[in-house]
Image 1 (cartoon, rainbow, N blue to C red):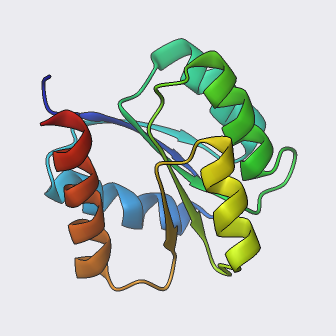
Image 2: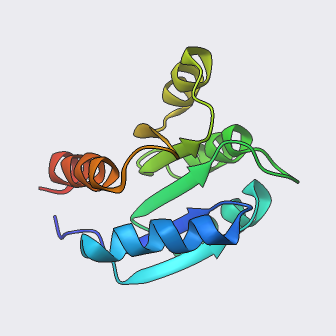
Length: 126
């Protein structure tokens, strides 16, 4: 399988789009789609089918968990990494139950995020 190069970044805070985009660029991603809520994420996912989706849990219009559920209905092979400022055990377990590939706290150091994503890519795509 070829290495992933497209990503959908879903967050209601534009500065986090840029931060995540920089991390993904540094590990080889070249094509990016951006959504500010879960509803936009579902529409963009349907249209572009990105290799990786990085999605915030707490957003307006449609929460990340609901969007995750819809994306997994569209494509049960979707690779979705949930991101959040507050990671409760219940939220992590729920996201995994719904099909998330991983869960990352937003305060995780950049190097650790890169390492986690690289491990995920190696596990899924190689």
